[in-house]
Length: 484
Image 1 (cartoon, rainbow, N blue to C red):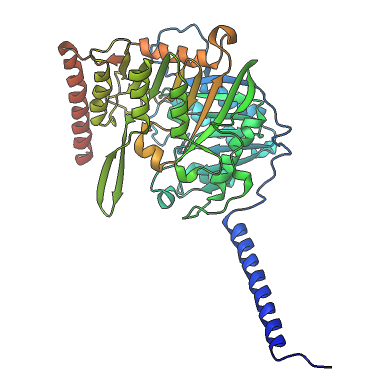
Image 2: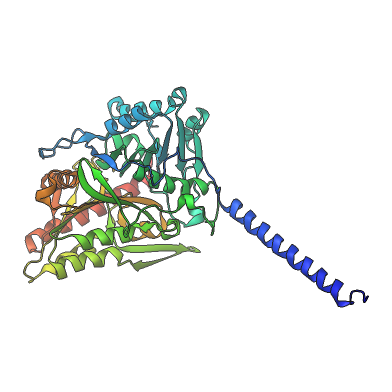
């Protein structure tokens, strides 16, 4: 019987090498997956897409400084501080918070106790979560915060996102998740000023585990970036979006039929199936039938990038152009309320003038712009500042964390909530849309909202605003150069 040929041992050896190489590749792949992200993560309290709750209650929450005299809008608003404390009252297992600022206790000893009281009280309640057996998790970009160190000493888990290394932007996201059932999204930071001196607006959504579960996935995305200087190329399904602009969550909001979904930015922070903030804004603008009301601190369709000591600025058309299309091509009535304060960019007025010029000699064209300015802002840039960041139309509302500045959407982390009502105005009754619209119209009618008209008489007001800004900047520079 003939023995094995000389080639057969060689073939068997090659097969063994091939199998070993394949196993090594699989091992490396598995190692990469597990090293890039915690695949299993923490449990989701047994809440799934199949058993989560869609019968939800939503409330508008605002902080309005006591000395802001605003016209009555006939609709009660829940104070922001009450909304936060209500969420803490409901917490039984976990509180997850993302905030760009942690300054609930003012460092300035001259700050009036009444102004700082709500911030200090909220901080103490966060400290007391440990005694109730409630786990506090925080995501921040602040690595040297005394308040975060104190919370960590009281059993809070704090993860840091290095936005400078990841995108060269900032962490603007501001939201809460409580027990994977209740959420808050809005303009307010964990800052005592947000509870006293600044005008803030957001929403609290109760008993809405489907939406909370999806927001928790955004939180998990941030959580996995702890002290990383890169964004992993492979992600777990636990951060994949559950809902988006093409497959929004169908739910009941205060017994009214609606759809909702979350959006994020920048694009690098959009996990699989997650809608970008700019696309969410685009959809809300495009779906408007009669009006679009926008309230933001800053409006500046520019992107500025610094590289090796030089800055390059370019026009960012994503939002600016869709507003122009709505006004000119679809005859949608647009109102834009922008804050006028020390940090208002001078080019804001140029872009506003460009928008307003669209309706010159055009019938059925309406685009109005007003600047919200508090009389005492010269002494304190935060006092009375309209810090809102939202848009409401005849059928939808978008509440976000970004001002409408190109650089923010391109480089900085933020989250937005889109709610769209299914039925027409006469069928749905009073909904969250009507509450937000009433809040906008109240601010629009207030004495703090100043118009810039195209006629010669009003151009004086336009110039005075610019001159006031130049004066404030000169004063600020003088104080900086001569601190004593």
